[in-house]
Length: 314
Image (tube, rainbow, N blue to C red; front, side, top):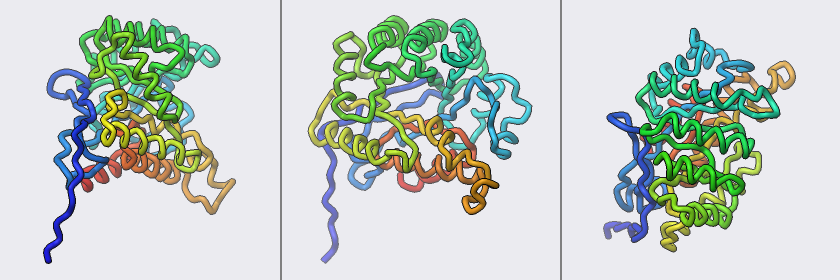
């Protein structure tokens, strides 16, 4: 007898969210099946990759191939132009690490100037990542959202402590997209989405960052959260969890010891750059299988591998 597979397409659907403008704009979400279950129903928008660019540029980077790729780049705009040529990249993520008041404390004005320079240099959608200082990020996101009004950027992230200021400014006043960041807990993720909705931010303007972790560093908590969010959004038709998920992979994977420890300290571990690439690939692939609609990555080799991984499963 011929085998007839039982298909499982859901009545519910992940929201489709568009980032950027013009020919290079992209849409994430929109599917009504589990991750990569294209055999159950068509997936209208495949998962995408954003390339992370830090305002530290290449300071402290110990990866020859990565340094070679960005050779000659002296500004974030230079790196963004280069990243835009990278196969597999669909968006550019600007990571303003030095804005942290406990570090370099780069001024908001300087960060805005860099963001505007990048926006003028590239056509791909922009994602803005802050420094994890709640107060500084709230002001930074508002200023950049204002300066880049009309660019349809995504700001990462609005958290429980600053969702009012970020949601009201980025999501409502300047019509940008807002990333709701929670700490690896489905209940916290849903609560933040509800709060943003009550504030007045349209559901179609919200993406989720339900947390991030490098593989082997508590990743099982992230994995289970991704699974539960997708199950609730589709099988239970929970409208407050139907936002597409964007996961910052590179900020987590490039700082763990497996990606940074010198080879002479652990000869059996092999080349440092290869280890970092493997950690980034392993983590990104696991996030995508769990349900991330976009992952943020750094290394050209990692991005090429994950791009091929996505295409092979679609």
